[in-house]
Image (tube, rainbow, N blue to C red; front, side, top):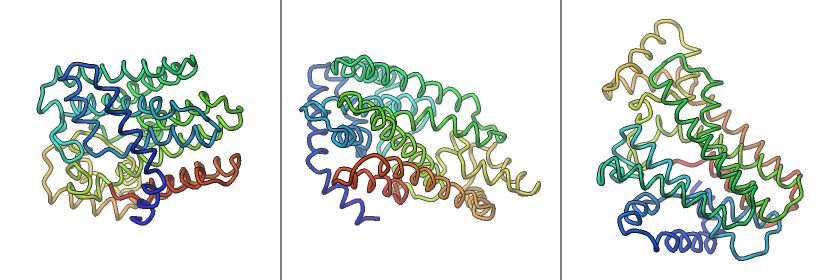
Amino acid sequence: MSDLKNKILASAKYDLEAIEIALKQNLKPYLDLVSQVASHILFAGGKRLRPLLMVLSARICGYDSNFDKTFSIMFEYLHAATLLHDDLVDEATLRRGKLAAHSIWGNSIAVLVGDFLLARALSIAADTGRLNVIKIVSEITENMSQGEIHQLMRKGQPDLSEKEYMEIIQNKTAVLFRGACQASAVIADAPEKEEKAISIYGFNLGIAFQMIDDLLDYTSDAGILGKKAGADLEEGKLTLPLIYALKQADSKDRATMESIIKNKDFSAGEFKTLLELLHKYKGLKYTKELAAKHIAKAKKALVGVFKPSETRQLLINIADYALARKH
């Protein structure tokens, strides 16, 4: 897995450096406090996956101008805005191993800087001169908000279905991945079959990415993950490993799991018991297998339309990494 990660980083080195410069430059003209809070979330070790997807998708679709890096950062700003708002809603204390922004600057500042980043993303979308790109970014914002609201409404409820979970992660995560890829096809004036293929790739990659994220919440440690293991459960978020295990469990084990879910202050021992039950009822295995199916769909969409190239291989490597990653 580390070999795959290193291969991706080496292949994308110059793109990632250019994205980093664009992220910083586009914060400079604004209030120092805005830049400070935004920088706290933006430069805390994010993978830059969403802007990188836009740059690579533009390249594979034949985009040949110089604005792809600048345009790509609207998706990192969108992502950062949701993290600022999510941490506040979830009352999370850690993000990427650092104190959450609202813990340092307060709730009001965190909300307003999140709003600023959303507006900044729309401004950059407008700079593309393409109405369809503005529409894509607007729809992403709407969908992500609905996904968060849906998740909040069902917080701590053990009867959340797999269908509802899929709706939530499609809105919260997959549409942003898809949008980054689709916007690239739009600015590249790509034919419809290429726009459709790269959109399918992004959507399925986003679903798998979130599933693995939810899996890691149970299996990774805080030093690697950047947040406490079981943080989603503490926040009342039921994710696929638990949803599946609950459905498979006998009445006794289901009652045990439900009692732990309903107790926000569950102990380390109770979390260990829950983890054992997730293994027993194959919740973790099922999640990994379903994520793998979405990665296969993503790769099939690419290979079916785009000719072999370094860019296509890099996009395939990113899909493989999304499945194999440990943080």
